Length: 329
Image (cartoon, rainbow, N blue to C red; front, side):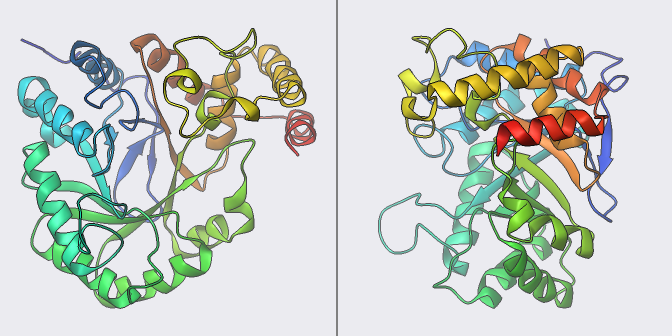
């Protein structure tokens, strides 16, 4: 029987999510890759227990994570039942809805019909009565924002989610949604967006500025740019890499000789800081107090142990930041 380590909270840093009362670990575990039906269940268990034993209390999912859609929630639900359920009150479990999940006109986007039905399905797969954070996974321009936000209000009032979040909304959309949710007295606390050294769109589309203004947290997905901000591809593309085994989100042409040269120079900066490139990339996100947490993916426990060390050193000199900027632009 699994028993969590007694000292699991000693080394993790926890950040307040905007102006809410909720604290999230600086590093969260994402169950996007490696938790589908093609994954190894024993490895999934090892990843989750290693994460929790080292202070990662937040596990991030979505209805469509797999493959196939729903598989990550189903597998994590089994892990909860067999290992983590005694610690439910110590866990933050988030899921999302917003992408295609089932055939017909009601299995996608942002309608009230879809969001409530999807969360009900997610809760069944997870074996839970509620999730801690429920996100709209992407904006839906064809559904009135009021309809989507009212669905979230009713979901919270029904006790199916404690907090709500928005993913991939830009600054203007966040502000519009926040106004509606405030009027409905819904605890909207967090925005989930892609953010890393190579992709700084949240600095340009108003997300960071708006979240600071509204007192909302930001949690970053793809902080390692799908593995580009690691040393994994320095000597070619491994056969077991995501590029070779999946290829949906990171493609071989993205790793040009010029890009790899810049990344290797970033690696030199990291080594001079006493960090791996991955640790520095995560620390670069976390250096900004607007960032509550970064979501990491992992295929083995050693990657989790490596990545959580990033939170130990998030200070950068002006020269380091300027050098990183030159290489990333």
